[in-house]
Length: 212
Image (cartoon, rainbow, N blue to C red):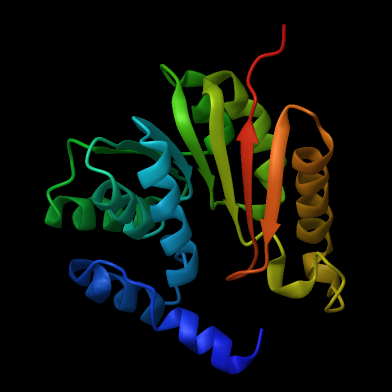
């Protein structure tokens, strides 16, 4: 798309005014959060899907969890954060927005915590360690309802996954693992998937559920 088209679209993306300060502060601290374009798409998905429960891997400052709960009033979020400092900051932000009853933060390694979850989820949002997306997905499948939506952010990883940009040695594992994840969701019949070149790449999949 041309620069003019991108600007035309971005000018029409709306996020909640109450979240602008938290969004800007997160970016100033170089904490990775969802882009406005990605947020807008997920908000539309939430309105259409009307989910009861969402599982998020990667809490950061809590921005996305708060955004999700503000986007759909009946949604409850379970979010997993590995880093203590970020989990602590996220709890403060969630408290400031009075979302404690709707957002649960679990602190620790997602691969250890996911098997201990209770109940089923309607949406899985992957935004944690990129090299573990496929593992996160495999652990989470037993906890997803039929026709659950799986959303993964940053799947093109700065153009390296598609080969548009040469991959430095330090990023080769991440790129290889992200390609494996994308192969998983695009080649297996239990998923119907699209990959969108917005932000740093976004994949959206519908999980058909347990097969007979």
